[in-house]
Image 1 (cartoon, rainbow, N blue to C red):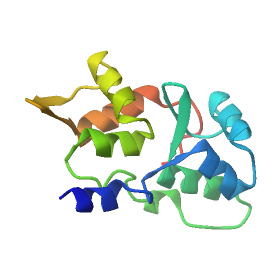
Image 2 (image 1 turned 30 degrees about the vertical axis):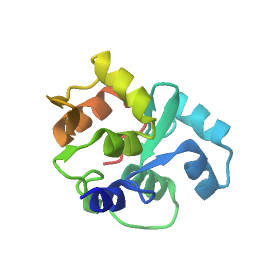
Image 3 (image 1 turned 180 degrees about the vertical axis):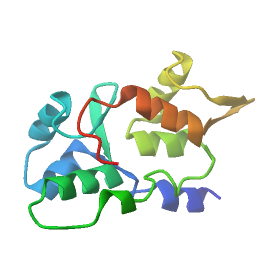
Length: 142
């Protein structure tokens, strides 16, 4: 199960960090962070970092292109490949934070979760709600 979850939420994650977005666009992470902060692109503020949903990034790039491309109505749900309940490790990978940071977020009530004794799980609905609450006011492309 862990291997399957890691392949679902591993390095080919549904999210991108500022460094990865910058590398794809040939820009610095500082520029991407500035764009996210000023709502120039869709992004999510998680503590002190910005992340971008891969599908939203691709849709945003397509929407800024002068070359005709894929219609935004055909973009898939960026979280559709995730299981209905995620472990702390899987959620931390999606949000690109450490597990201790995610633990602090849960303790502070930033995100609802299931407390199953020694294990905690975050529902996909709770993750969606959290992401909606931390999204910047950048372009809505999906």
